[in-house]
Length: 146
Image (cartoon, rainbow, N blue to C red; front, side, top):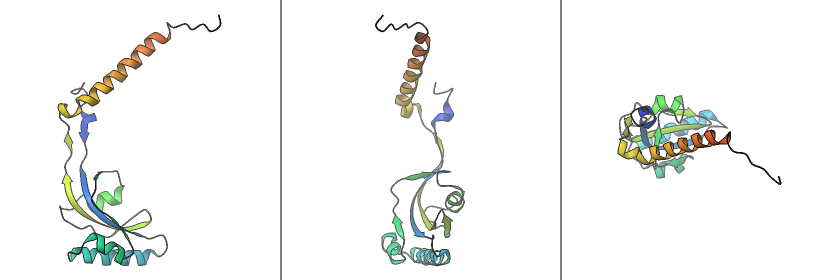
């Protein structure tokens, strides 16, 4: 099963980031200017947690990984080409002006069989149950109050 379905067990490129988002629903130019200030302060070495509130934004520390394609084309274009430690230019994502620092990169990789054995067992068990159900549904007769 693993060899026949190897593409199911590929982890895409992913990055761990920290970011500041500034609401741009009202004055987009002001949000852009505040995000540019935030970027300059981050570039100068200031801490994300202190910069975000100072520019009226929200800080999102690097708690998890973001996969290629999961945040949209603007994110991918501005973030995935960065080197570790690099800062993105300010870009729009939804209703926010965003600046991102790339903390760590993990390249696409195929998971080893040992990593996915449990998942494969679960998939095969489900397929076996569906097959049994399909085979038995035409043979089963239920009589109620007969």
